[in-house]
Length: 150
Image (tube, rainbow, N blue to C red; front, top):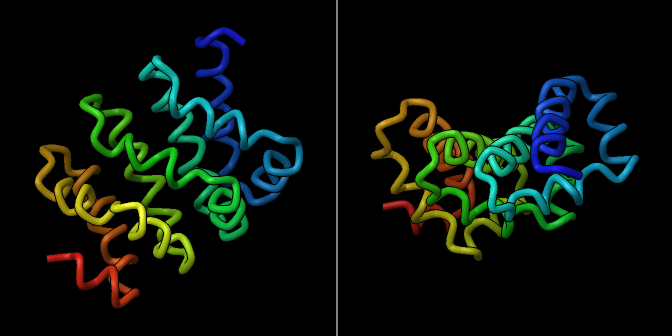
């Protein structure tokens, strides 16, 4: 699909996945792997919209587990350092949501995600700081991650 169509599709997913039954539908119809692949697009707009859709899916417990199992964490952590504020805001929001799952916390820590989250506490954007703080609060539930949060 064209980048523009894929980007708009991600926005649709973002908006409909506040409802659990829609999250179940997206997961069931094979909609998650394309979202994860879009995170590595050259288009920052597509990256941001895919991260937003993932953030929305990860709002639901089942979505968090499914996304983790599909390998979203190693795909989204690099976007925390994006210079594009929309990409950064949505990717840190997705990490915040998925970090409420215990196994995700371990993966984020093992993939060196703590330091970038700590760094985002100094970001000029309040939403970025808030989501980074929320993710770090979730990560602090694990002793090993807590040791990395200085």
